[in-house]
Length: 253
Image (cartoon, rainbow, N blue to C red):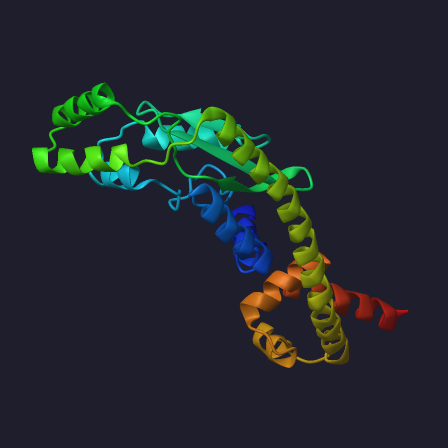
């Protein structure tokens, strides 16, 4: 049972989010900048649904009025696969994504949420209202959206660039953290694999089932399959069959 890259990336991100380093930095980042910090696993062609959005974007997308929102997120994800990327939507909202690397692969992105570089003026709000009317929204909803739009976080270009640089530096710390997590997991799993091999060797002439060996090493069958495959490059059945062939060859000799 081979774990997919998408599932592996999800698991790594969940472990990162559980660390005190990430939680402390995310809290401090939001306190200082007023922006959310979100880490999202790379899922191949799929775009994560948990994109950090402003209140305005959440309200707008609830009405499916922002046609290029998904397109913008796709573009941002693609461009951030190997370098820091920043994109601006038709509404004038800017968003950045910073790659988190493991070896030669980007496994996650740090994202900031949307900001504006300038506070919207009366003309911006008027154009927004006209656009929303064209989309069929009522005046009460337009008023709520205009208020949310006016309250979007404003950060000037220079300050925002420094903010993104801070995240790029933090991404290097996250990469170091990933290495530590994977090393710790490897050290934790090796005794399990050694115990499984020993159990197989001692019961090679008996009927061996996945459930029995998982119970012997005190883990679930699913977890055992994942760890054993990663450590040996073979499934449990393949490993047992190979060992039985090797044992038979020795007996024949």
